Image 1: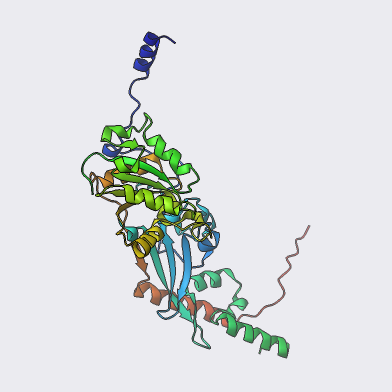
Image 2: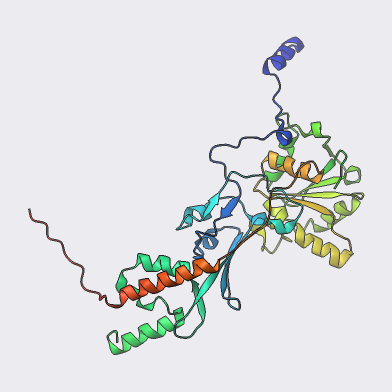
Length: 168
Length: 187
């Protein structure tokens, strides 16, 4: 290709550089950006923590304060959207936001704190109110008897039933 | 933060090359960052900033420390990608240090070096525009948009949930489990 042809080609294409930091830019249709947890909807079931490959979302119980903490650390997130796929209530959504850069490491954390129910027998906190409501709505009424017991007490109860051969 | 043109040294500490390709993409004609005065240089001694990618493998830890200390002050570190920000999917692997925070801990404890100013750019890999945004942030051209979010369950909704759960359990008290009804369809 001769030099003159090259110049004409360059002129026909024109300017391709985007003015990004001074003008906004559009992201593609199905771009996976910053995940956001909606605290109003979250039930604290831990499905997202189970599915997260780098464990950017961690769900743990703080027994002393009686809360379940859903902790998302954006710095480790790989934006795979598995949490969005598994969330049973649609509380976690990936937005199109990509401008996440920050000079402060603490800005990259998202925390949701949900209150825990205490076991009606031994008084140990074991599950969130919202999760129990979600479960109670989705099981038949005769299965709801043991919902307010912690797993250990529930195990004792069912083994008693086994022993006597009936629900007493 | 530095107000003048940034000269950037690209430091790869065991990255998968995804972030490196995005860094090189910044210098291509589409989002040409040389218009902002940013230039890649070949030696850390010429640089103002370090484009840091990768989770820092054990093997390259001494080289990374050499390169970091060779950069003259004032300097900025751009931690690019999930690996550099927090270790990524290798955060607890035996052969990596796991992110730039851990590196700073080692620098502080063993070499007694204060950590330099750092801009964290999460993403796996981040878009070239996201890196440009981070660089603009480092130069003080823009305001940051990312803030920590904390949601604590309010007391009012807690009361409603308590009563709802009790109602659901009370509703179940009288019911018993029978065999499911078999619907017979007449032909």
